[in-house]
Length: 304
Image (cartoon, rainbow, N blue to C red; front, side, top):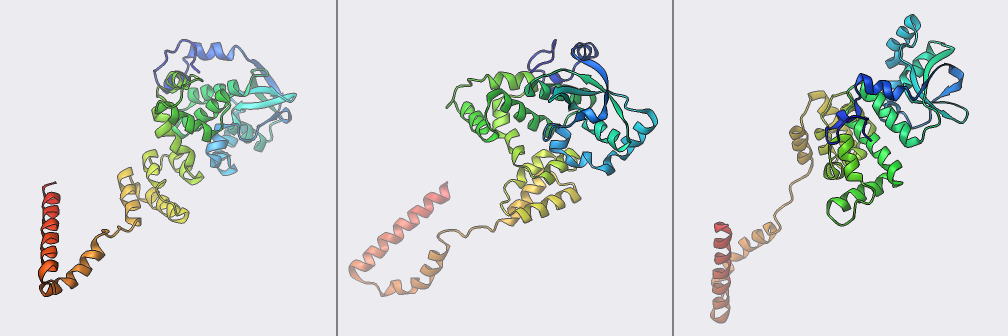
């Protein structure tokens, strides 16, 4: 997906249209003063609701509710036709705040019966125009769009991306070109880094969204298998503002160092050494040979 007039490879800015480009996009829609009862939100569609649920709770919405009561809804919601009603493409916070403010009608830009994939694209464009989307929004929306484009599940997509990256599979869906044109990053980045975000917990996603923790710091938490320990480390990392290196050290401290595999053998041999002087004849010669081989081996290790 690229906005008309934008060159591929310019990064996520490809999704941020100029004023003229935004006008060209919104010309496709019809401005309607819609009854709020005819507007609804499709479960799991809106990026804010999908990735940062706390942004939609009543406490977070209070300032917006106050503004809407005083001035009304200043920016129309973007909607599409779905089941004879209007489904929100972008503007769920405004919709929910308007509900709390007891509005009866909403200004909406109706884009018609567009596909799920086009609706996701429009949501990204609208959000990018108003805000600076976080890496979480970019990534999870990107995988959602890729799933619509390729008809693969997220798990299948990650395997596909890694297969293409390793040269084991052909990029039959043109994913590499699409990622580069849309986000300015290629398959390797999405296969090896962005895919890790799919394994973040809701608390970890919120921490990144709130800029309490860098995404690279959360990558380090993925190495913790114990979920309780992982939550504890997350809380501590947020509290102290840890960087990735700090989290890595904390994770390493959770893993006890493994004893050297020869340690117990060395301890046992130390107790047996006094008995060497009891050996005679062939046994003494064999012991001498083994000692010489051991010294030679240790000498080689030392050179390394």
